[in-house]
Length: 471
Image (tube, rainbow, N blue to C red):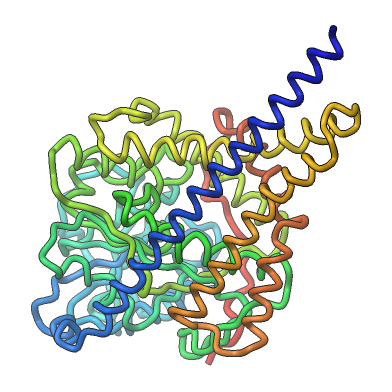
């Protein structure tokens, strides 16, 4: 009887996991389908001549770019220099040195000829102690804030306090923004609808050619670890977040590249310093706030504004990053669990939160359980081999197909990678992602469940090599 009960449990568990993966990947497939008309619509707007003239006129609202920096001496000058050369009429760059332990502040001071100025702003959000405010003799629109270490969210809050303009963009210090990205990012704010925030696309800069602080020749990395991350980013941004535009908006606007209404951020008291991933928590709290205020403001994703960033090139740094991301997801889902299936919050409560809770947060636990129960079932003869094959086809094959579709969507729409060898690499990395890399990331994300409620919140430092070519 015990054997029969074990066989029944194994079979039911295996079928439950299989159905879970079918539903999850089918939802991803729906996002892919929804992304196609979104890409067409965004491309049409981007190429409209009348709208292009409008975007170069004096009617564009001024913008503040917030750049939190902690131990970023390798890439900080290149990043800030690139930001100071953007195609936009009125904007300021606010760099916040968050208690760096290296010589980030000295590098900034020397490169931009900084001098100290008295503060000329009201402090709306409390932050760690600010040591000083500095202006540049070379660039009037550059402000540098030097403060005690308080974490990335605290640094962004210091930048929010000091920003002068109605819209702010949060940009990582290791990010290179394309020259017209600010113009493109402002597009939804100029279409007549009320917009609270907008997200842009982040792409992988590893092994790309960088000249004069710009990515001039995109390349798909030759190395496995960084190559598969290109596919991940394409899948996440090109159809993942784009498809969410049709479902009421995603819960994620990348901390590396997103624009917000400063008024809304001040209303919710800025970034939460206790959060491990401040961008996810910010978007959830902002969407909750908008719903409670019955505001019509929405938060779209725009695919053509592009920022390039350096991704982890070693398993050690990648593990830290993915574990930290998933810890933040778990903590945010738990903190905002009252939104789950709550019809008072519309699509946020009945679509977005359930998907991120069951489809993103629990996915690694379900996948590992599926591997174990299938292997045990086959070993004990409870599960037939054809069923095990079907499980891996659904768990891996469906995901591989979606990755290949993301590559195809990139090739049809934006075609940032012009060489045939880059396309071949993209296809190769999309096919190989499920063999080794996926299992690593699943285990790292699973480990986050054990550490989420007892770990100290830090920046999660990444050792950087700098961009490939500088001139």
